[in-house]
Image 1 (tube, rainbow, N blue to C red):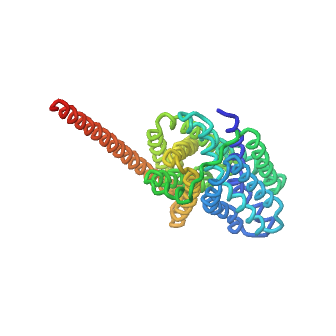
Image 2 (cartoon, rainbow, N blue to C red):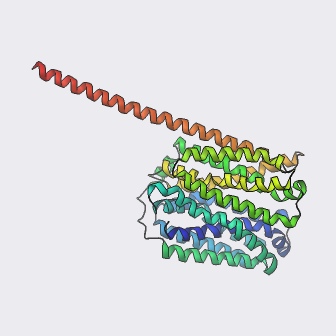
Image 3 (cartoon, rainbow, N blue to C red):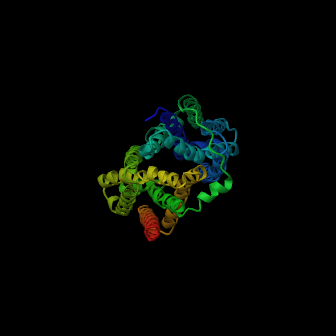
Length: 410
């Protein structure tokens, strides 16, 4: 794999760290600014909304300039946002910094996936995409726990200053390691939007929302599930979260490796495994050992869907991939928000912390059903094309026969 993928992975590591680290630092941030925990929670909500809004806008901008230059610019925006958060004198300024940083998220992964796929042979595209996303999975193993401990010990501002430093390092890496890339062919916005009319693209994005969203019915409420239901001590939550991140890391690599060989079978396996693991989690929650086994399995099956789904979108939008690729990253965050909201509704209705996993299982099952529909449509389209080719060859044969008959008659 090219060294350029390392630079992309560093950027992904920084983005993953800043996205999730606020969850562990909310009490410190709230106390420092004198706001409530729910108000401080807007740092997470605002970031998610910024990803959804920023992805299509900056992706369209990115279709006009060199992808390398755009990636450097996006990491510059990310660095500025985190630096603003680190220096924020009031809560409103920190929220603004979070939103500025989030604007780069969707476009970076969307354009980065295109660049990563273009750096390798066609049969290694999904593996290259997974290498970039490795930075995101490693951030959940190393970046988020370390950033939380650093913020609790040295102050949350130090954490965001370090993340801004990661952004600078990614900028340097991209400038140094990513080869000069030609400017994308001039594509009208209408062309980028036209790619979204492809049913296979829309199905892939819907699978992204439902499939990976199902994972967040567990992760959003994992801490109270582990302490109140499973019976773990609060001090054990950190290493269980690391275990969850290890599962995500392994699933990402496996998904990328096998998606290059058999993309749709890989999706069927990952979504089927995710559905089963989420459905069994309420039972596993009655045993500490079973819960510790189920958690990395859910993370692994969930992230095994990421490389094949991203590659699926790129394969279906080869002529105008930028907007669709970035929107698919936004779909991950949309799924996360929907899953967290639905899980909260179930808990508010009086069910315990295991119940959101049933919601997640239903979402993953819905994604699996869409994958089956997508494969059926693809087979039907392939059959139609083959039938058209056979008919065309038959017509040609008839025409040749007629010409020969005419020639004999003469």
